[in-house]
Image 1 (cartoon, helix red, strand yellow):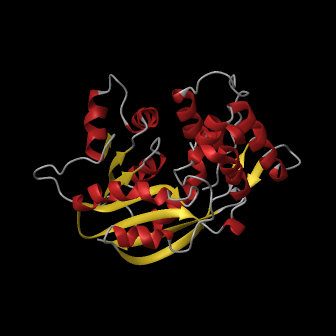
Image 2: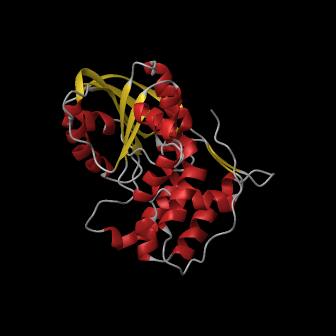
Length: 286
C-alpha cells in the first residue's frame, strides 16, 4: 500500500492556540497513512484474520484497526488522545441511526482511552500491537512500558506482541527533519530526555526484555512519507506531536518555517514531497 498524496488548505494562524481537533484530523488525513505498509506487512506475516483478537496500543485514529478488522479480526484500540480516538470511532463505528450496524460493529471493534480491565468470560487477546514507532525521541520507549505492563496480562500464554521503531537514520530521509525539533526545543526539553537521537539497534529488544517478552523474529518495512506539497508535509509532520516541545520553546511559525526548509531537499519537480524511510518491527511472544 502506498501513501496517498492529499492536498490541504494553507497553514492555520500561527499565533492561535493549537486546535487539537484540527491536528488530529491532519494526523488521520495526512500522516497516519504513511505507516500503512508497516501495518500490512505485520498482518501478512502473522496471518491476521477471523480468528485473531487484537489489542492495539496507541491506535491513533484507527487505520491499523480498520485494516485488521477488514481481514476479519476482532479489535480493541487504546488511544489516550481523545480527538484521535473520536476519529477512530467515526471510522470503525456505525452511524448514529444504524442499530443493526451498532450490533455488527460491537462484534469486532472496541475503542477505549486506557487499557481495559479483564472481563469475566472474555477470551484473552492473541495479538498485541504497538504501532507508534519508538526511536524518534530519546527515551520514548520509557512511555511504552506501563502500557505493556497493563496489556500483557490480557493476552494468552504464547500470544504475539509486535513492537515497532524507526530504522537506522541513514535509511530514514525524515531524520534531519526530526533533528529540527530537537534543536529548536533547546534547553526547554531539560530535564526530560526528549530530544531527537538516532534509533538504536537494540531499542525494541530492550523494551521486550523489560516487559518479560521473548523475541521471535523481526523485519524491516519501507514506509515512504509522501505529501502533495510542502504545506501538507508540514501539517502532517506537526500532527505527530514530535514538534510540540519546539513549538513551546519558540513559536509555531518558526517551527513551520524550519520544518519546511528541512523538507525542501525532498521536493520533486511536480511539487510533491517524497521522503523514503525504513521502519523496524520486533515480533515477541508472551
